[in-house]
Image (tube, rainbow, N blue to C red):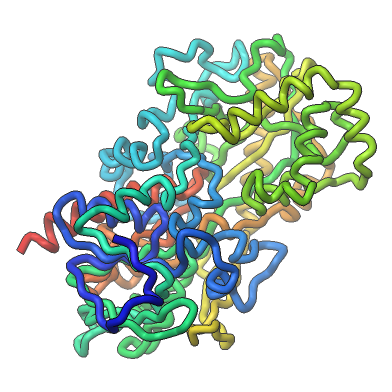
Length: 557
């Protein structure tokens, strides 16, 4: 059952399980509990659609716009959370991400990779992204094993895959089950403003919530509480819940809000392959389940340790579509469509803005000229891609254009080093419900930048050693280029970090807040390192692991 909290005629709600936040982590948590016979209240600040007024509740008071995207671009306060604006990329962390690597400071996870892998298949089910197979060697239905012929797996791998969901908007995909499940109550337009502890400080006695528009106070009480409202907002809620713990819940060792990470990404090179261009796998494959999968250039764990590289992946992408020098009618059509007033309806606005950025100022005329000279291909592309992108249930995530020159831009997406000085604090400014907004001090390090540059040099060496190609750098000053592109905020990792010892983190190996018996966190903010993968898939994998622990260890009595 789903109810708009503005219409409630009582001021106290009670349930066995209380989940705060209806993104992928919160919705999967609520469904897992309900399917196993537990009563659940799922609280969501927004409704089914986006509300600008409610969205503004999550704005930060201070942040560096050169390093961190605005919160309204990173998050969604509505059913489905960030999955509403998510592209659909699904991939897990790698085993090396869970290792305590001496050259990656503060990389001490309390859990091992093998403890999370049993949940990957069910995580794939939630995302509708097919089988939990993330390497070509696990397939028998995709013929070519490498991106180009003659490039074997070794220090560099070209067989690792990312999978793609429908893309799955959790609010829309699970709406019917959430609305009709007899054990689930969804309360929309209700914002949790404080977690209230009992006098001992070891248990939660309830949540103080306010209706998101009118601000009327409602108390929500449960037996177990799960906070799943995104990395920054989860951290903000814990910091703001300071009536018993003056520095905020979970901040017993001054770790709450620290180690804020995302990823370092951008483009500093193109790949010029010397192989048959017709045999370059530059776009998507589809497996036997019709799921879209995509290959990446990565490094073996042994090579990462040997060269002390942070984890990173490289992907072949189209040339900059905003620069008409590419001479491609399809790319020019894509640019004009995304740059038009209707462009924001095609993809998430943050992705659109990134796509239409240009390093070269130009008018629309050269783009129309490209379309005219490339008219047959452009006219064929429009209806074909339109059907695959907007009508088919499993939508093509993007498009890639074949280049007879066999030259492709290389996009990198890498791990960010944990840094306790990169952090979130409460600011003095308050939102419309009276909650203090956050100040974000998001920092990259020289090690982040250096590792990106060294990774490209190793990729180049490997391609040259096997006689299949080489990198061509886009600029002479690689360091400056990497620094200029270093920006995130979409993958909010590390600020409620997991630890064995309460002195070194906020939550334990089961995502329970240290020292509080009934409070759990389902968020990428728990993650100790950021890896090369975006965090969405692992949020749900850890949520499923957490639910099993709560059911078998906490609720057993």
